[in-house]
Image (cartoon, rainbow, N blue to C red; front, side, top):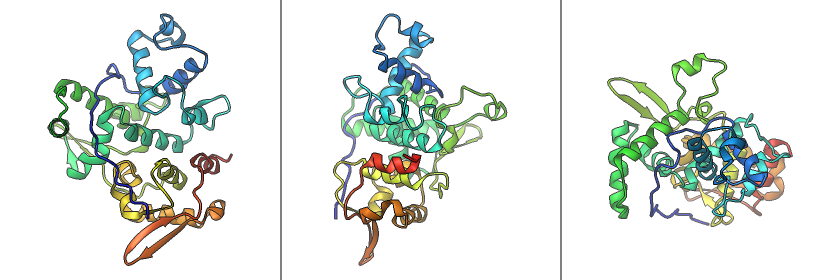
Length: 298
């Protein structure tokens, strides 16, 4: 059995978004901009993208944070798969694409707040405030020897996160709303307004989360071999249970649907139970993009 114990974080990064949450068309706009041979540092970037200088920086940041650009500034295979002229969902009309982007945002670690909140804080505190997050983030910074923690910067990151995942009452009423955060439709974060806002991310059945998206995220781990325990999939960093806030029962049901799906028969996907240890096993591992092809319909 391949037991993946994802190493703990050893660095933290905050800011970079210029206080802008990612808007609906920014990623496609940024992708096309790069593919047309442009650079975000070009003097005419503001003209080509049709936004202000700070928004240019923000689009560049979100392209990296969502795993669409590599360290050399080239588009990733994932970016090409979704956003190219022959991409599966260039305008993000399929909710499965939003789940994939959410997974990338948490697991890439470019913006540490998403990793910290989904992988750790929500398990430590069922409900949390912005101040709870700031205390938690400062504690994590001290633990790993990160001396550049800035409370004001981290607080701004929290504001951006809230806008990314939570739609305001006004935005809900506005059918033509184009300013909502990219991931509000996932309904992952709930907000309760009292004397101060109280946030929660509870494990739910996630009926709108496709099983293929879960399988993609499992196969995305290069260290994963041909078997993995359900407990690890449920609770380890960047695994489905942590990233998607899904109940263990629902996760098992999603995996069972894959086992029973004829598309995956040749891969020998099974769920085993030996001495109380449940595992997801493969005779041969499918390519993660082949899994997405099944989902998007080739």
